[in-house]
Length: 295
Ligand SMILES: [Zn+2]
Ligand SMILES: [Zn+2]
Image (cartoon, rainbow, N blue to C red; front, side, top):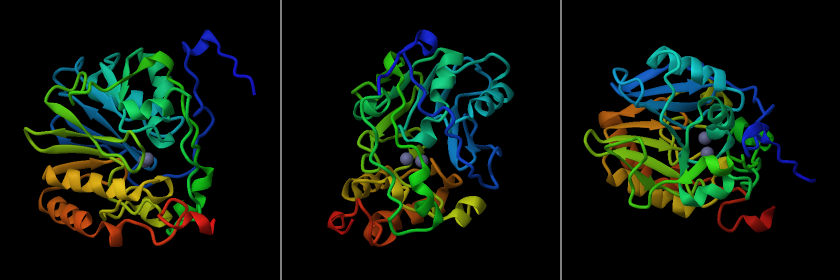
């Protein structure tokens, strides 16, 4: 197929257009202030984060951009929180899966703000590389079985996306640093603020059983490894959880599920880190070691 690049999208291509997914949860649209300046908004089955003080409405950033077709919901929530026409200074991405970049092209067109992601994630954000297909055969519930309907195509942000600075800082997020947490994707990152030990996890671990349709719907809180159908390197994913556990976070916002705090977070994350092989790694699946031959 010949790609025709038009100027309509400023060199971008929105592969998420018309990819709306008919899945939701009971918490969709019900935002939660995890810290005074960390607002977590669930959209259908994924979380986006507004980072910034409401008293400084021109100095906030958006972390991740939700499901395909949700740009209006994000803009509405941003208007409610920071006032009309107070756009963020930047969009920061944990990784490029469809449920985290669903609205990114729409939002960049509307807000004209830069996007930052890890260098290793850029091929998946600039139309150069598609993710491996979601694994519908992986051990797990109905969402895993349905996952082949999830898009794995790369969006194309063109020159609107830039790599996160190599020294670990995050543009427009003073006090925060990024931590490379690969395994779920090669350039997956989490964000940590040392001052109050706040952690934005992305999908390095999540607090809901994301492969189960019922548990996604009810958002029953339970620490889990990264969503199974999309995770391709389980050893790296384990190392990433160990890395995050070593930070001893006291508040964690994950890409899926409700935020987790305090002693519960400490205990559950310690357990996940120690028993990742039993709790997180599926018994079978296309991307589980030694299972490729069975496909
Ligand atoms: Zn993901
Ligand atoms: Zn996700």
